[in-house]
Length: 294
Image (tube, rainbow, N blue to C red; front, side, top):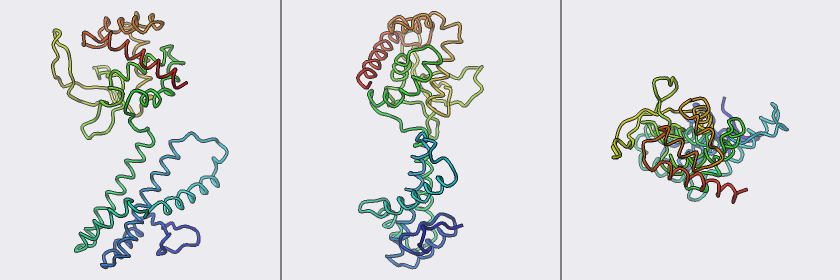
């Protein structure tokens, strides 16, 4: 079923195509070598993209419960459609780039339009995924702010201070700049560099990393645990620290960043001989940021 805004026909400038038949009609019209049809087709593709973006942002935001019913959902959906149409076609927008590509490739209408439609919808899906999980933050302050809520929730359940987890996650990922990725480039959401040992039955990301062997850095290929969200990473880390006998002494040192980091290094959490010093510094850094943002 094609969806249009109230009072708009399927061919009106402010209509929004939302299914395969409507997209095929746009392809046909743009293939008639009409500059106006090409611009309209490009605008419609951008509208689809923007609608997916807006929908993702709403889904990623905690609901208040006041409008969580069928009528509220319908109203929100119609509002999203209207907003996406209004935002599309602005100067310098994505539709201009799509229109240029269509114009260059107009020799083959279906082939020309298949490319931007596929790219636009794929980009929309990627945008939805990014909005649902949150963008990868860059920089210490952004990193701490982005992950503080999840860290605080896990801290209340586990007894491990949020600043300790934030500092260690920041140290392991370079404050979000060097997160573990799958081969296809998607995020593994592993903030703590926890490896996938024989007892791990979940998803795995295999990457090249640096290990210290006899005190010397070496590049090795290792298998790391992969999660569906950052919060899942925090929870798995807390479970590892609290349930493994290996980290029993670390659990008893949560009152001191220096002592906690030293206990983790002694237990073999990492092979870097400077790990305790670096980790305690990162924990104190995260704590300062938390206090400043409070």
